[in-house]
Image (tube, rainbow, N blue to C red):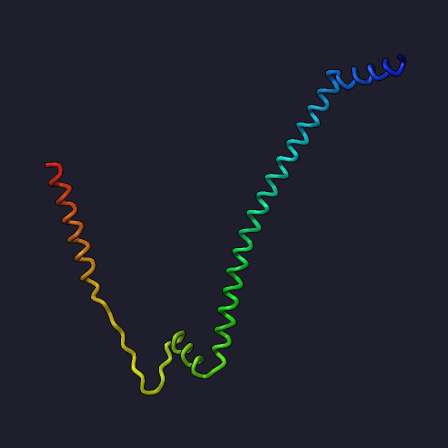
Amino acid sequence: MQVYQERRKIHRFLRSRPVLFFLAALALILLVASARMTIRAFQAAKTREALETEYQRVLEQKSALDKRIGDLENQEAIEKEAKKRFNILSPGEKVLIIVEPSGAPEASDEAAYQRAWEFIKKLFR
């Protein structure tokens, strides 16, 4: 009987309001901590994915640069790159510069603007 009474005291203590409030607060704290960790894990996964795509882009850039460096080992590629970057001419070559007339595009834009304005005026007559 004494064992039964001691068990009952323990059960009564564990089911008392202060203990239940303490356990509820502890459960709430653990729930909040778990939610924070989940959010941080999600953010870390997102950041990792972004960094992996950046890493792939950098690797592609590196391979393109390595290819360009490999191409510049022969004389023809060096000459072609110099012509492209610095507008260097070989003996006997001539440069052709094409200049578009500057007045033509503006006139067509102005005419289109005038036609649109006339259309808007007609709508309100």
